[in-house]
Image (cartoon, rainbow, N blue to C red):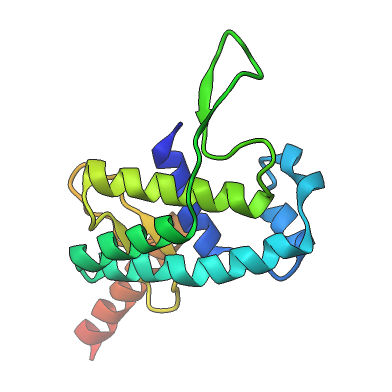
Length: 174
């Protein structure tokens, strides 16, 4: 299992605009093998889960380690994960977070929870954040060595830097 990738997928899920099944398929663009398994119930389950998951990012952004841990533990209790060894390639056995009968939503929820739980245990509970760009509310996973990430993307970082530069220029001219 690639727990960092799963944690980053959790952030992408929180940031996704899941209006319907087609939007979920677009969100899963890099996982086309899941497209045919998407059903309407997956969208509703993921929308509900996304709200709960955002609270974990907010707690981490506020440096509330106790709330991060208790929130993740509550979610793990509500959405038990059953890891399975995948043998679709006998020469490359690997762990999956759900069995073959799991729905798309169950798979995505399991990946998100296992990714975030492992990230919190390995890197700390304050590695999740909310973008510092004033016009953005996206979340992100901070895997930087010095825990310095403040923006969800290069675009938001550039936007904030340009705004700060213009503000400095305006103040100097005024």
